[in-house]
Length: 131
Image (tube, rainbow, N blue to C red):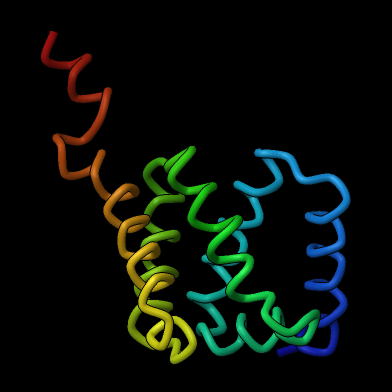
C-alpha cells in the first residue's frame, strides 16, 4: 500500500530497461518479479500497471517475455512455486487472459513446463542420492 504511488514509475522503468537492454537474465528476473507481484497484488493489479505504461503491454509481456523466458529456462524449487502461483492466478482470475485463448493456452503450457521437473521425480538431487 505504501508503494502504490510509485508503481506506475516502477513499471515504466522496468519496461524501459526491457526495451533498451533486454538480456536473458533480466527477462528471467522480470518474470519472477511479475509472478510475485501477481501473487501479492492480484492479476488485475499487474494488468493495470502494465496497461498504464502502454496499451497492449500485458499481452506483449506475457506472449513475448513471460512464456519464452519460462520455456527457455524453467525456474527451480522456490522460484517455480512462485511462478506457478502467479500463472494460476492469471489463468483463473484475469479476464484479459481468459478472453485470449492463445495466451491462456501458452500460460497453461508454461505451467506444465515449470511443473514437469517436479512431477518427474524431484530432479537431480534424488538421482544423486540413489547412486
